[in-house]
Amino acid sequence: MCFVTLTDVERIQWSAVTQGKKASMRISNSHLQQLTIFTTVLTGGGIGTMYYLLQKNFAESDYHRLALQELEACPVAMESLGAPPLKVHNIHLTDRYNHVDKHTAQIKIPVTGIKTGGYLYTSSLRDPNTNRWNLKQAVLKLREGNVIDLLNPPSTTAQTQAAEHTDSVDIGRWH
Image (cartoon, rainbow, N blue to C red):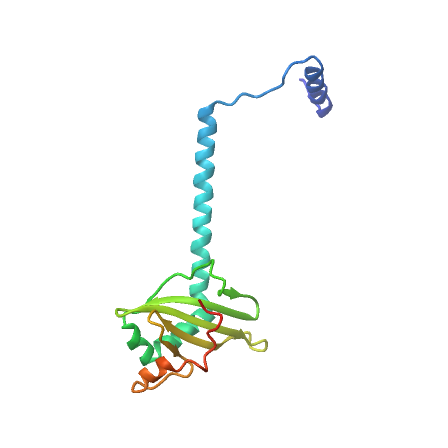
């Protein structure tokens, strides 16, 4: 029985180098291509899974759910969108408006109805005592430029006035 120690391996490599011989390992091009394809598929699958899980976490969060409940409870906003049916789209993960940390959540949710679409801008704070999210701001900005404050919704008859009155809503940082 022959035991090879690390020092024996080092001695063999050193002697090959000093004698001018190359200690190399040959890998065929087909094996390299297979390895490249496998790595690409594995990486793509991992990125796709991560994207799906991030969107799922957003959709299941309390701050997301509270904002959508507020939208669905506002008849003026739902009528403006042409909803139901209301379609809630995935959040744009690269949008700089979206920011979530331990105490605050600020997200921009794309929504559409039959008539039009827009973005639901929300801002929530976590209560340190109860550890629950509280909706601080929920504003629907339609494609046409109309803005509806969901926490102070206009009456159905004052809908046209609400579209023109946006002074009390902070939309300066919105895109």
